[in-house]
Image 1: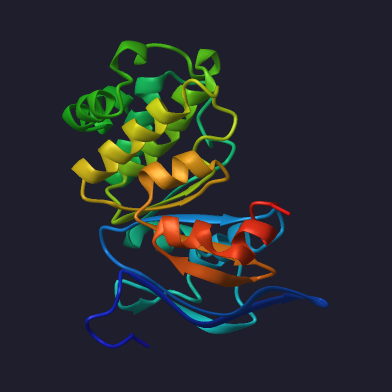
Image 2: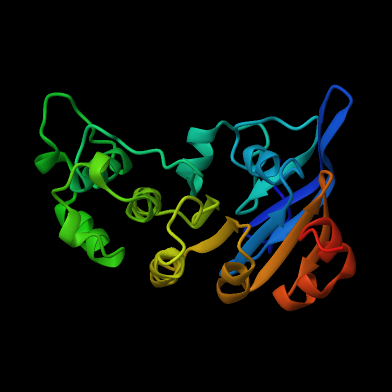
Length: 252
């Protein structure tokens, strides 16, 4: 079943997920437009990550539908949704710890082309021009030969997003892209991520707790409370909402 033409990049209708007596997603009607930079905020347990997991195929809703690019993806698994153009980075970067930075990107390149092989070296199966371009785009060129295990957290976050971008997505969903990053490096990391997404014309959706990061890099904010979107709009307007200031920011 396909959604009507002219749809947003991603859309959900009446999306609901119940765990026993807990409603983790409560009838969510949501649209994400191409080119947006959406920040999702909310207290721990508000439903932010659950909603992402439904939209990316890791969880199946109790009811409701998810559409991506006009196609109904509700019943699809994570791999198929990724193939359609949804990239994802995680709060804890999902990296190949036994490899170098360059090799991680080579693996992603070879996977994108369906050329992964235990019998052929990555130097042959990967698109080396694409790998070099990505290293430059996310400013990891000087660290290309470094093992992932020696990277500081900010560089690991950049590499995680770079791997997602190697798959040529239309949308990248990032779960707390600055968590664990040194405070003095947060803005530099986020600026590099957003510049890379903009250059590749990729829509951005990120979960974030740092208000300064949200105000600087988001064009839209969706605030979650108890499994529903309690406010959705321009960042300054959402942060001015007294309910959001009390329930999400913890002001009294």
